[in-house]
Image 1: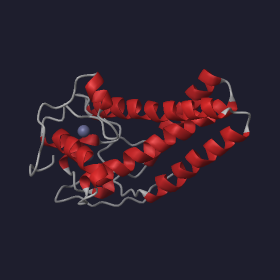
Image 2: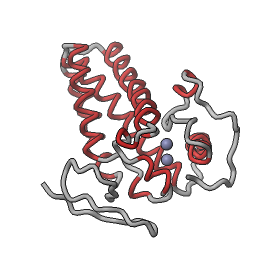
Image 3: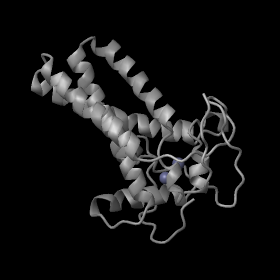
Length: 211
Ligand SMILES: [Zn+2]
Ligand SMILES: [Zn+2]
Protein backbone atom coordinates (compact mmCIF):
# COMPACT_ATOMS: atom_id res chain seq x y z
CA UNK A 1 0.00 0.00 0.00
CA UNK A 2 1.56 3.26 -1.12
CA UNK A 3 1.13 6.70 0.40
CA UNK A 4 0.92 10.04 -1.30
CA UNK A 5 3.54 12.04 0.54
CA UNK A 6 3.35 15.78 1.19
CA UNK A 7 6.57 17.50 2.06
CA UNK A 8 6.63 20.88 3.72
CA UNK A 9 10.21 21.03 4.89
CA UNK A 10 11.72 24.39 5.74
CA UNK A 11 14.85 24.26 3.68
CA UNK A 12 15.54 20.72 4.83
CA UNK A 13 15.63 17.86 2.41
CA UNK A 14 13.64 14.93 3.79
CA UNK A 15 13.43 11.57 2.09
CA UNK A 16 9.82 10.81 1.22
CA UNK A 17 8.04 7.77 2.56
CA UNK A 18 6.90 5.49 -0.20
CA UNK A 19 5.89 2.35 1.58
CA UNK A 20 4.20 1.50 4.86
CA UNK A 21 6.70 0.41 7.47
CA UNK A 22 9.65 2.12 5.87
CA UNK A 23 11.70 3.62 8.69
CA UNK A 24 13.45 6.43 6.82
CA UNK A 25 13.08 10.03 8.00
CA UNK A 26 9.73 11.21 6.82
CA UNK A 27 7.30 14.05 6.88
CA UNK A 28 3.62 13.64 6.10
CA UNK A 29 0.87 16.20 6.37
CA UNK A 30 -1.63 15.32 9.06
CA UNK A 31 -4.73 17.13 10.18
CA UNK A 32 -6.62 17.31 13.47
CA UNK A 33 -10.00 16.80 11.89
CA UNK A 34 -9.66 13.14 11.06
CA UNK A 35 -8.66 11.98 14.58
CA UNK A 36 -11.21 14.41 16.06
CA UNK A 37 -13.97 12.85 14.01
CA UNK A 38 -12.90 9.22 14.49
CA UNK A 39 -11.84 9.33 18.14
CA UNK A 40 -14.68 11.70 19.04
CA UNK A 41 -17.15 9.20 17.64
CA UNK A 42 -15.30 6.36 19.34
CA UNK A 43 -15.37 8.15 22.70
CA UNK A 44 -19.04 9.12 22.50
CA UNK A 45 -20.14 5.80 21.00
CA UNK A 46 -18.23 3.80 23.59
CA UNK A 47 -19.82 5.71 26.45
CA UNK A 48 -23.33 5.23 25.04
CA UNK A 49 -22.60 1.54 24.46
CA UNK A 50 -21.26 1.14 27.99
CA UNK A 51 -24.28 2.86 29.52
CA UNK A 52 -26.70 0.74 27.53
CA UNK A 53 -25.07 -2.55 28.50
CA UNK A 54 -25.79 -3.05 32.15
CA UNK A 55 -23.32 -0.51 33.41
CA UNK A 56 -23.99 1.32 36.65
CA UNK A 57 -23.39 5.04 36.36
CA UNK A 58 -20.91 5.41 39.24
CA UNK A 59 -18.71 2.54 38.06
CA UNK A 60 -18.84 3.67 34.45
CA UNK A 61 -17.91 7.25 35.27
CA UNK A 62 -15.08 6.01 37.49
CA UNK A 63 -13.73 3.85 34.68
CA UNK A 64 -14.24 6.67 32.19
CA UNK A 65 -12.11 8.93 34.41
CA UNK A 66 -9.55 6.17 34.86
CA UNK A 67 -9.32 5.78 31.07
CA UNK A 68 -8.61 9.49 30.76
CA UNK A 69 -5.90 9.38 33.45
CA UNK A 70 -4.36 6.31 31.84
CA UNK A 71 -4.08 8.23 28.59
CA UNK A 72 -2.14 11.03 30.33
CA UNK A 73 0.24 8.39 31.70
CA UNK A 74 0.70 6.80 28.26
CA UNK A 75 1.22 10.26 26.76
CA UNK A 76 3.94 11.04 29.32
CA UNK A 77 5.70 7.69 28.83
CA UNK A 78 5.57 7.76 25.02
CA UNK A 79 6.90 11.32 24.94
CA UNK A 80 9.62 10.77 27.51
CA UNK A 81 10.78 7.23 26.81
CA UNK A 82 10.20 6.94 23.05
CA UNK A 83 10.16 10.49 21.72
CA UNK A 84 13.28 11.41 23.67
CA UNK A 85 15.02 8.05 23.64
CA UNK A 86 18.78 8.42 22.97
CA UNK A 87 18.50 5.84 20.22
CA UNK A 88 16.52 7.45 17.34
CA UNK A 89 15.15 4.06 16.30
CA UNK A 90 12.85 4.22 19.34
CA UNK A 91 11.52 7.59 18.22
CA UNK A 92 8.62 6.01 16.37
CA UNK A 93 6.75 9.24 15.59
CA UNK A 94 9.88 11.20 14.60
CA UNK A 95 9.57 13.50 17.60
CA UNK A 96 13.02 14.87 16.85
CA UNK A 97 11.63 16.36 13.66
CA UNK A 98 8.93 18.12 15.69
CA UNK A 99 11.61 19.66 17.93
CA UNK A 100 13.53 20.90 14.91
CA UNK A 101 10.36 22.29 13.29
CA UNK A 102 8.02 23.24 16.14
CA UNK A 103 5.97 25.65 14.04
CA UNK A 104 5.20 23.10 11.36
CA UNK A 105 1.62 22.36 12.34
CA UNK A 106 1.24 19.61 9.75
CA UNK A 107 3.65 17.55 11.88
CA UNK A 108 1.99 18.11 15.26
CA UNK A 109 -0.61 15.37 15.12
CA UNK A 110 0.47 11.88 16.12
CA UNK A 111 0.84 9.68 13.05
CA UNK A 112 -2.49 7.99 12.38
CA UNK A 113 -1.06 4.49 12.32
CA UNK A 114 0.47 4.97 15.79
CA UNK A 115 -2.68 6.44 17.32
CA UNK A 116 -4.68 3.53 15.84
CA UNK A 117 -2.13 1.00 17.13
CA UNK A 118 -2.11 2.59 20.60
CA UNK A 119 -5.90 2.47 20.69
CA UNK A 120 -5.94 -1.18 19.60
CA UNK A 121 -3.37 -2.10 22.26
CA UNK A 122 -5.28 -0.25 24.97
CA UNK A 123 -8.55 -1.91 23.92
CA UNK A 124 -6.93 -5.34 24.17
CA UNK A 125 -5.49 -4.61 27.61
CA UNK A 126 -8.77 -3.07 28.81
CA UNK A 127 -10.70 -6.13 27.68
CA UNK A 128 -8.25 -8.54 29.36
CA UNK A 129 -8.41 -6.47 32.57
CA UNK A 130 -12.19 -6.08 32.74
CA UNK A 131 -13.65 -9.02 30.78
CA UNK A 132 -16.80 -6.93 30.65
CA UNK A 133 -18.07 -5.05 27.60
CA UNK A 134 -19.58 -2.05 29.40
CA UNK A 135 -16.56 -1.54 31.69
CA UNK A 136 -14.17 -2.01 28.79
CA UNK A 137 -15.97 0.55 26.64
CA UNK A 138 -16.08 3.06 29.51
CA UNK A 139 -12.27 2.84 29.73
CA UNK A 140 -11.97 3.19 25.96
CA UNK A 141 -14.21 6.26 25.99
CA UNK A 142 -12.10 8.08 28.60
CA UNK A 143 -8.84 7.02 26.96
CA UNK A 144 -9.82 8.21 23.48
CA UNK A 145 -11.11 11.53 24.87
CA UNK A 146 -7.77 11.96 26.67
CA UNK A 147 -5.98 11.36 23.39
CA UNK A 148 -8.09 14.01 21.65
CA UNK A 149 -7.41 16.49 24.46
CA UNK A 150 -3.70 15.85 23.99
CA UNK A 151 -3.87 16.57 20.25
CA UNK A 152 -5.86 19.78 20.66
CA UNK A 153 -3.79 21.06 23.59
CA UNK A 154 -0.53 20.29 21.80
CA UNK A 155 -1.79 22.12 18.72
CA UNK A 156 -2.89 25.09 20.84
CA UNK A 157 0.56 25.36 22.45
CA UNK A 158 2.17 25.72 19.01
CA UNK A 159 -0.16 28.19 17.32
CA UNK A 160 -0.92 31.80 18.28
CA UNK A 161 -3.95 31.95 20.56
CA UNK A 162 -4.95 33.78 23.71
CA UNK A 163 -7.27 31.32 25.37
CA UNK A 164 -6.68 31.35 29.16
CA UNK A 165 -7.19 27.57 29.49
CA UNK A 166 -4.13 26.94 27.32
CA UNK A 167 -1.79 29.60 28.73
CA UNK A 168 -0.33 27.47 31.55
CA UNK A 169 0.02 24.46 29.30
CA UNK A 170 1.65 26.62 26.64
CA UNK A 171 4.18 27.92 29.16
CA UNK A 172 4.97 24.38 30.27
CA UNK A 173 5.37 23.12 26.74
CA UNK A 174 7.53 26.11 25.78
CA UNK A 175 9.82 25.19 28.66
CA UNK A 176 10.04 21.68 27.24
CA UNK A 177 10.95 22.99 23.78
CA UNK A 178 13.23 25.78 24.97
CA UNK A 179 15.41 23.75 27.26
CA UNK A 180 17.17 20.44 26.87
CA UNK A 181 13.89 18.65 26.19
CA UNK A 182 14.41 16.61 29.36
CA UNK A 183 11.66 18.21 31.41
CA UNK A 184 7.95 19.01 31.22
CA UNK A 185 6.96 16.02 29.10
CA UNK A 186 3.27 16.25 29.96
CA UNK A 187 1.07 18.05 27.44
CA UNK A 188 -2.42 17.42 28.76
CA UNK A 189 -1.31 17.69 32.38
CA UNK A 190 1.85 18.33 34.39
CA UNK A 191 0.77 15.73 36.96
CA UNK A 192 3.17 12.98 35.85
CA UNK A 193 6.04 15.46 35.66
CA UNK A 194 5.38 16.18 39.33
CA UNK A 195 5.20 12.47 40.15
CA UNK A 196 8.45 11.63 38.33
CA UNK A 197 10.17 14.92 39.22
CA UNK A 198 10.67 16.11 35.67
CA UNK A 199 9.06 19.52 36.13
CA UNK A 200 11.31 22.33 34.97
CA UNK A 201 12.76 24.67 37.59
CA UNK A 202 12.21 27.61 35.27
CA UNK A 203 8.90 29.28 35.91
CA UNK A 204 8.27 31.18 32.71
CA UNK A 205 9.49 31.48 29.17
CA UNK A 206 8.19 34.63 27.57
CA UNK A 207 9.93 35.00 24.24
CA UNK A 208 12.41 32.19 23.89
CA UNK A 209 12.33 30.46 20.54
CA UNK A 210 10.92 26.95 20.48
CA UNK A 211 13.12 24.05 19.53
ZN1 LIG B 1 5.50 20.34 20.90
ZN1 LIG C 1 9.57 16.51 23.22
